[in-house]
Image (cartoon, rainbow, N blue to C red; front, top):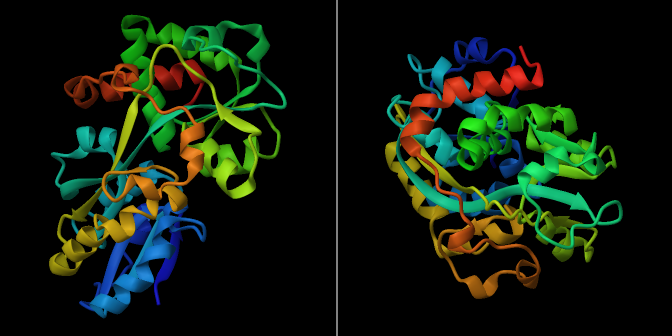
Length: 322
């Protein structure tokens, strides 16, 4: 039976010094909390893998990918993870050469966007990001997540740069004026705040409404159509550098890429799988915004690698984050 441990961002370095060496019969997987939640992908697939491979999976979960990356950095001299699951294209661009993980392989993808409560607001036509942050109708009605800590917040950071270029800082300042709350992670922003009615707009995923349509038979939540286009987020699974369980780790990666697992991603992870059979997706996916290739904003990977620290500092200044 799998074990699940939750590590907070505070105390990460101390934790890395006290864990014992992982035994060959245990595969330690680092991931973020919603992947390992009761409703998530990992609880739906790990029991079968454990039975097939005669190995125990230990899930070590983090509030978001920023904390997970920090833990990997803290443990570089004494690696504890075997597999890292949930890093995304921005993480790979930033840390792909940092010897934290090897051979990252895509397992799903999606698009970050703004989701709204249709009982509170109406968006009958696409709007621009500029309108979203300048129209007084949305003053104090937006919840976002912190860039650098949360995956959606970091995606927004790069999305803004891709759309506005040299004018991005002005966009952040306007967004800061419109924003009610900057949450530390997606779960807090979406479940704890947005669904509890703290604000009618939240930074989330274009696929989030599919969950409510399929699981709750509700169209209360929808994505705002953005005329500037969307940033594609790809999530990866990788072997952790220094793992002593490379064979088992690779077997788990192969399992995640199998049709058996890929076909479960649309109804557990609520993202798009990279494989599997699209005819198995719930009908709710036909009712949400799915960007065309022309709608996807291009990202300069080299700029992400070289300029991210500056971008994040500018973000923090705009939002008054120390």
